[in-house]
Each structure stands twice: as structure tokens, then as C-alpha cells.
Length: 593
Image (cartoon, rainbow, N blue to C red):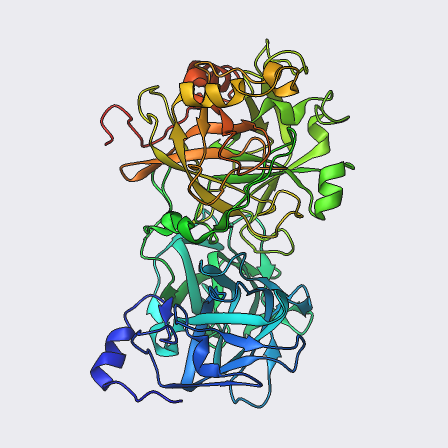
């Protein structure tokens, strides 16, 4: 089925849009370009995002796919995917092929191997897939590789823009040497103009980075491509078929050549110009965290374990830029079972400081946890199963816990808070930004709706997931929380292990709602709440009985009870005593409403 072309004026107006404009496959949406849907089986017209039905594929493999063919080439930057709400089926992972002529197809790859994208975890929520390597294509194929249920149920939307929209002049800030340019936020770069500053022969290597830390060369085959000027003439590097998604661009001269003048052309992928100017800000200005009413009820009643998010949906890349993955580098029963190195969650509170749960670093819980060198810290992480290009990896310089913290089975687990100093500051980006910390005990009273997030199974007994999940949870009154745990039978281990005092808070869904909670493997992760334009961390995932069981709420260390200790620890352990480290940059909780 094809869709008629819009007027030239309308298409021209779309040239000015972000390069994340929907093609128009979604139900009742306006089409960016005329297109045709087809599939190797089933009704391709049912593939529309938010449609009343879904496309179904009976078999898995490279010969079963759904395809969209656009009338003219489109610059493709990502996907939105969705399952089927009627049959309780969805695609859990897929591959993507594309072609500029609909005959010769290329596969999106990751380090030379076919890239497998994580898709959905439930029937109706929408998962966002952002392509690290964007491309121009006329035909795009979605090939399911794994699914929940006996059919591949899929609805989708394609995001991107017209290629002609991606040739605008881009603002940059040059390094002292002039060889490295930083953009005002992540952009797509289609043209790099290299202008030598001297007449004569000169050659250059071009590289790019989404973090301004780890750079990747523009390749020719398997080697860095060399760009040469013979008489001082400018070099125009044309990347329009595969623009670079990048934050920094580096042009490195060979030999005695001096640093050139570099100019960039391309387009934007977010509405924001520049890096976050305050803690607790994210480039996502939407209500995606309200989409949890569609989630399944995943009640469970198991003994105390490390916590993970249950009943959540996938977070989009960069949606929570303070989210941190703590990866244990030695053998651990949980990470060995999950298949991923992530063991605990945490959050960035300052470019060089992370906050988490103290019990993640106790040898009495598991041998080796208290040794800093056994850990790796990943910030800007998204997909545990592959490279996103947004990650920054760190070692831990020091671990700071409260002096009177202890964990035994016959005393309450309290003061479950730790600060980690990183071996260097993180580079802030669209994907890395500290969260604000709550300093006022009265700021988020019972009834406040907050969010918890982390990498973990969306069922209590499942394995770890590739992408972070997030779930919405209301804070509940301490007396209600205390009463639920007090109702446990005498002799139950949680009777001694839980104490609901002023240093903790509880959060859980009501018994009539679908179960959502943190669960195995996400201890130390954040519970954060909206305060005006800022997201503010109110709690740290600590303990609970089972996962997503409204009869036993999750228990979180209350940030505001330890704010003085947090500030003192940062100040006393700053690298520069004359300019000590502080939290809550750009956020004033006294006036923020």
C-alpha cells in the first residue's frame, strides 16, 4: 500500500526538522515521504506503531522480515518498536538490513558482526532503538531473531529525515591545538571540510567520538583513511550516505603538517543546543515514565536478594544520563547466571563521584566485593551486549562507607550508602549528566510518584537484560511499610533485617496495580523524582522481600538523611582543596518547584 506525496512546501518544511522525524508508518500519522510496506508473510499493513493489530511472522530467520520501501532515499536514524497487546506476544530482538536500490542489502554491524537490537519486553510499550551508525536508504528490512510467544508480533515506526536536511553549518568549539572540535551536543556530520593552513602537501586522519574520550577513525576497508591535499587546497570529506553520529571530531595531521581549519556540516538529533547546564536534566522532555499501566503483574515472593527492576520497560539511550552500571570483574553467581557483568546499580552525582549501596562492597556478602580494583564503572552505558559509543569506563580510586555500617542477619540493614571516587572526571554529554540530590526531608512526601531504573530481568527469576529498564513507583507512608513487614511471622529473617526508621523510605505499587519494583542485581540504583525541570534522587535501592510484591514494598536509603555526610566526604577528598567537589550544580531546592 502506497501513500501519496505531500506538497513540495510541506516536504521543504520538513528539511528544517530534527533528523528524528517519523516516516509516518505509525497509525494515523502524517507521512514524511511516500512509502510502501511489504512482508515475506502476513499482512504488512498491520505493522503500524500503535495500530489495532500487529504483523505476525511464523518463522525466525533471515528470510522472514517486514520491509518499508520509501519513494526516495531517506536518512534513517532509529526505530520505534512495539509488540501485540491482544495475543501477548512481542519480538525481543531483531536485526536491520538496508539498501539504497532495494537490491543490494547491507546489514547494520557491531565490530564486524551483525548487530542484534533489543526490542520489546511487553505487549504495548514502545522501545526506542537509536542507530549508532546512521545511513541513507530506500529500503529497510526488520528481521526478528528472538520473540516472546510462538509468533513474531511487531509494530514499528522509522525515524530519520530527508538527506537534504543534513547539510547545515554546525557550531563547534575548538581545542587549544585546533585539531579537535566539540559540537554543541550530539549531531550528525555529513560534510567535513579540511582547510590546510599552509601551501604544499599535507595529509590527515579523521576520527570521531560520541564521548570525546574514545575516538574511532573513518575507515577505508579495515584501515584509517588518509585525506590528502597536494597544493594546500581544501578537502571536502563527503559522509552524506553514512553521516557520523558524534559529539567530537578530530583531524590529525601527519608529519610536519600544522593543524588545519575544520568546518562541519550536518544536522541535529535533539532539540537542545549544548550540554546539560545543571544536574538532573535529560534531553527527554516527555511523559514516557507514565506508560507503566500496560505492564504485566509480576508478583513474586522470594527471600531477600540483591535488587533489580521488575515490571519495567526499556529506557531510551540517554533518557537517564546519571544511570551507572557497576561491573564486578571477578566471578559472581548472579552475573554468571545473568550472562552480563553488571552487578549493582549506581548514579552519577558529580563528574568524579558515584553514589550507591554500601552492601554492594561488603566481603561478607561475596568475597572480593570490598576491593576497588575488582570493579569497573560504566557511565553512559546502554546496551550491555554491544558497544554504543556513548560509554565511558572508569576505575574506582576509593570506596567510602559510613563508619557504623554493618550487615549481619540479626540486625537491621541501615545506612546502606556508599560513595565511589572515580579515577578521573567523566566527560559530560547528552548521555552523561549528574542527578540532583534531595536535601529536604519534606520534598517528596508519601504519594509522590518516582522512577527507579537499572539493568535487570523484568521477572524475578529471569536473566539480566541488555538494556536498562525503568518503572514508576509511588512513595508510601512509613507506617504502612512498617506494618507490612511487621506482619511477617515470628522467626522470619526479615523481622530482624528490616527497620523502617527516618533514614529509609519505601516505594511500591498498590495491590490493585501491576507489580513494579527493583529486584535482583540492581542494589545501589537510584529512586528519583521530578522537581520542576530537574530530576532529584530521593533514595538508593537497598533491600526488600521478593520483587514487585505490593505486600512488601521496596526499601530505599533516604538521601536527605545523609546529605551532610555526602557533602563532607566530597569536600574532604577533593583533588583540589581550593575548589572542592560539590553536588547539585545548577539546582536550588529552596526555590525549585
